[in-house]
View 1 (cartoon, rainbow, N blue to C red):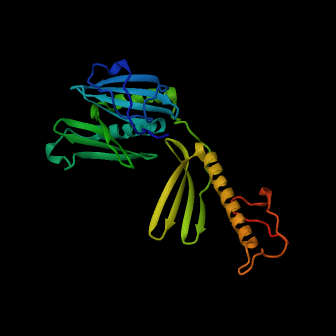
View 2 (view 1 turned 90 degrees about the horizontal axis):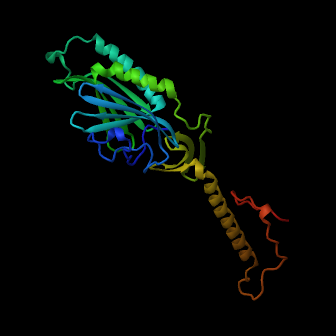
View 3 (view 1 turned 135 degrees about the horizontal axis):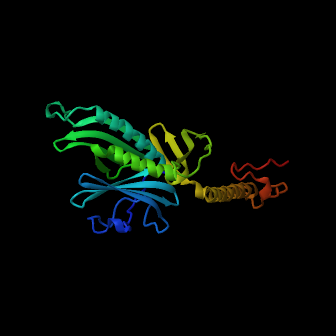
Length: 295
């Protein structure tokens, strides 16, 4: 399971109403999810900001939505898989220890980019950048979430003084609901390779927030393309491919028979010799189109 999907998520909970939150946002799944459940929520007031930590569950598993609401009512939010939330919790401890070791802010000793400490988390196709920063308003932890395939960046800013309180609230939720993201936990099949003429085909099995998939890559010297086939349609994909193989095998077979029994050039008859019976479907290797030799 990944930390966030594409699309928009409706904000249905009453706790957000009247606090400047619009009706859109990032969605853990594409489209509205009436089957999505909110399992627990915590609210933290840190300086002038409110933070909501919501444990949610949909068909892909459990995750935590973190929403930040500023004093002006504007909101920001990020999504964390349960395992990512546990990793984030651990980083909060190290960031807090580092923050405690710092002396009073010194305007003459601030890095050009304002960063005092940085870490990065990776989950499926999501990257999370954790930056402890300092500016004229004080020190804060900025958490940015990006999507590797492109798309908008979402981020929250947590006042440094509130990192311990935030960590403790996150720990309580993880203690209650665990760090299991859901999804397949077994070992996936190894990749396969097929070479045809000057082309190479690679079959790789992977897993992301949408489940298990097969990536089929076609590679030539100066060309590469790929398709992704979700596991839920592998059987149908196989059946369609087998049907095409069967039809083309029969077409090649019919073409060969027509060639053998066709008119002899310059004559009116057909080629001599007894005609060979068509092989039955059980005699045909559907995928390789091999027909047994007949005597």
